[in-house]
Image 1 (cartoon, rainbow, N blue to C red):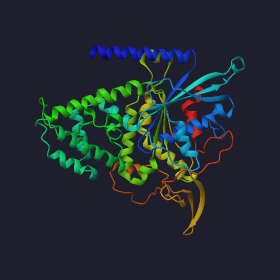
Image 2: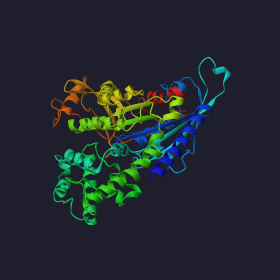
Image 3: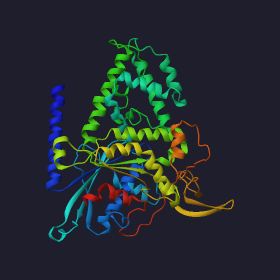
Image 4: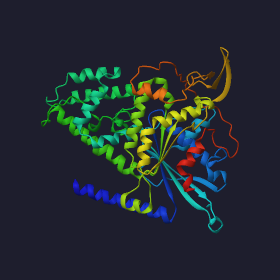
Length: 471
């Protein structure tokens, strides 16, 4: 095992060196990771980003596009032959067809390569011809990212922490009732193990639906082809002493270690460790609507997500010696089109406050970070409506469930983010002086002019931060 691990590390290091040299002296490659927790809009973000890089009429915030230096852009096969291709054409068809609808959410790792032919800028631009820059976009579920924290934990520590954290949650009571009846020192019973794993997975799904973000292991929510395998047939159980052979405790421990070695480590090695730019999408409005506990849980998840990154600058020599680091991280609050633009600065301020601890840690390590609010695909229009003698800034769109047009006022976000984060940290059950609504809108029917990508809010600014310096 040791020799195999060393050999694998050497092979990966050699591949990293080759990629670094190729990117430095030939055609640069930017590997952009896109992640976020459930319903944060990863698929829509990637689809709209690619569409707006292919047709750049709505991208004035991307300097290379505004200056006309991007001469052409085209899609080509991604370099990783074993990774599924991000189904861009199907997702774009879902958003822009005659009956537009939101595409299916991310359920596994996928990748797409967009190549850009760019003229250089600066004093020597007239002496150099256009060059090709490859943008490799890697899409992966945020739940898998949280699993990386498991690599530093033993089964006993993970079980203790998990059971203590979920003990008081209503969604966990059925599972906790079963766990209290378990004898960890009894002989392993496969029927019991499967029953506990199914009950724990049911809790995780219910917890995610209720707005909790600490729903790990992530593959219990998105099992894919691992469904029913022993690596996904374990659960946290009380542990008071070292395990003995052939006990339930020992088998649960063995499967937990198999999950780390067979599922989590390959994801880190094959995909995550090769990313050098990252965007983390956050449904902040959805968390605010669910209440203070959801906001605090999301804040902690942002800290845990960043703990999985290796932030820092990617100098050429450091890449050769130490491997790639994530040098730019963007935290983006999605669904900004659910608010009137007058409230966007407040949403951005809340996003900055939510990710403050995570961004400070990344900056200290040498990475560049930013936070903003955006909508990868704008699904609403804005209007002012009079109500009880007040003018309310509203948004109008087609309701997702009924398809009917409706104007909606979600409530005024506070100017000071501490008015949200304070009650969240204190464990408040609800907001004392406000009620924040949330409405699910369907994508609007589009008629795009030649050269224009789908309408968005600040997607061009996000692209400028993430890749503008390399164009």
